[in-house]
Length: 536
Image (cartoon, rainbow, N blue to C red; front, side):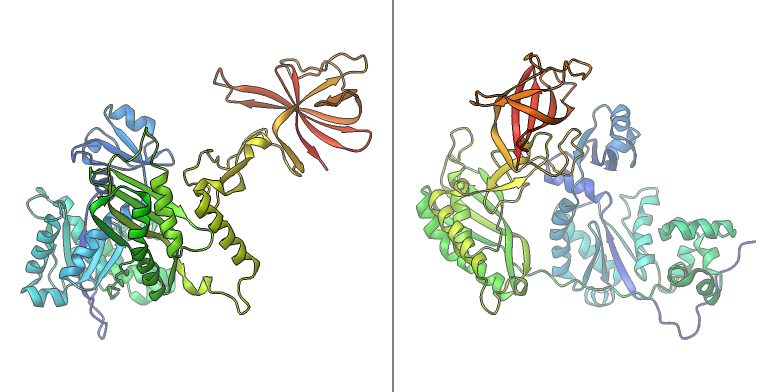
């Protein structure tokens, strides 16, 4: 016989009436809107090779979350797959949150696609909880969001379950609002399974004790639950009992930090654009400073009168001032002048969005100034502003098997992931065959020809099985006519790049030490020897 729900203890604070707004399949909705895909598209978002989320059309074909992408594609032949981007969810949900804040104050974003609102004030203003929900439906419908569910109950937990209960209705499109009367949340939650608590360890333990539903869990004494399961169990017990006293913590709307400059008539010359935008760039930096922030990465969008858009993310090694912002706009426009992808009409709008902002106090000058670092930054920025974005380069260590592949030059101020002429490979990948430390002191940009022979003067080679034809006895490098005796050597260490590709490379790496103690790193490829680097 199932135990009955326990009465609410005397003196317990009542749960707060809460409205929970839920947009089902929000990652899918965000991706459809971002990529302008039809609503009935069979779409799957992939994270680490598995389906993270899938559209209703994909679910009809048997696609489910957690499937390997190959299995999902086998079930749905017309399945489209896109990489899952959490930042896209947040970015596309921000307008929804802002729209709700214009009609109801005090919105708390639980996660993209789910937010909570205190319903007491809106229900009084609009004449009831159902009327307040209708206003939300109308506001979001004007934005093109029609699949929105709202639950109103005592406490955020019960309100969330009420919103999700609309998926269990026979005709979800006919009723997208569930209101649980005041004081009825315990009865509403009593039939729910323990899994809705999202506490797997506690759920397994309760099931071993014969507890199957939230009603069974709520029937236990609160003191016994706390003594047995600790604070986490006590909080879950209050939620199961409909006594979720957590308040809605309204977010502080972020300040409006981006800036937009419209030009009429459109500007076709770079110098005109730089001069016209300089004032707005100064206002952009001043607004950040008033908020106690500095921008270390920004997003620049250039719009033309013909509808073309050029977008790029710029990063600064220190932080952007007004001149730096103008330089980035100018460089971006200069970089789009190639005939294959250049802008064909004048610039009508420039939109600057701060992508990464940091506390101004973290970048404040020291008591005696920033010293040499500030002078270096100013000098490099001055040279870069005169010669162009790609004229000042800095070296980074990238991924790769050969030392020359690991040395990559990118424009000063750019992040390694930003667009560059040389692709930057991830250095955290395994890269089988790469050279372990310590690294050579001198790496040749172009391998130097070399010769390695045995004691009889015959060239040393490696057969397909990786065996040496003879021990190295002498070697020579470059234009050096003399042969250097080999004091010691190690190798070969094979490097097999892209073994599945006919254009792949097969190399062998050696370390040689001559009688003077100088060490060399050599490569053997296609029966030819090359000097890759030297040790000091």
